[in-house]
Amino acid sequence: MHSVGITPAQRALATRIDAVLPQTQCTRCGYPDCAAYALAIALSQAPVNQCPPGGAQGIERITQITNQPLQSLNPEHGVEGPRSVAVIDENWCIGCTLCIKACPTDAILGSNKLMHTVIAPWCTGCELCLPVCPVDCIEMVNVTGEKTGWDAWSQKDAGVARERYTLRQRRLEQEDKAYQQDTLAEAEMKLADLESHTTSPAGPAKEAELQRKRTIIEAALAKAKARQSGA
Image (cartoon, rainbow, N blue to C red; front, side):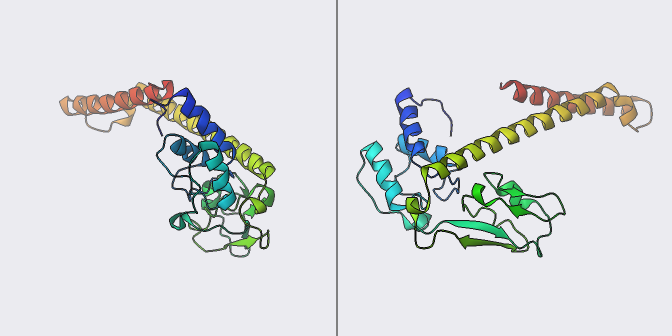
């Protein structure tokens, strides 16, 4: 969601709303993370009743901040239930890493073609790992009995989840920057030695091919550099 046109008051309200969300980052609200949903509420672009993990008590918390009428949880976004933790059947895990990429808190450890395991205290029960597993070796296990919503969660849990999510976002940004730098370096190397990367026979045809490749690579470099500078 673009920040253009958002007032300081709206931003402050979004921060207050985000502080009372469970930070499971499950996307069931229809937004990519809890902060995005909080901002949508602050901008009057989303109702307050779209967070199943927070449940009825979570909705009440939001309405107290926003002064909106109390509403029931919208069933289109799920139902309030106990907290679950993902458990991987390591006998069936094929080490595809898809669940690792999907986990919003980096709660799944493992490597390509090696078994994965879940660090339970970091798992928010978001269930985002379930649909990406190609061998259905992940199960959600109830760890709070009949307790649901905030009775099954705590502000401390939410704080840990937010910290884990923030760390993951930073890691992904760093990896993206590193990838961009490597791509730039490779493109600049090819541009500097374009002759050896062109197999066309000498003559006008080869010169045309060189110019075509040079134009494409220079345009790609310009785009990549603009992206790095934030232009």
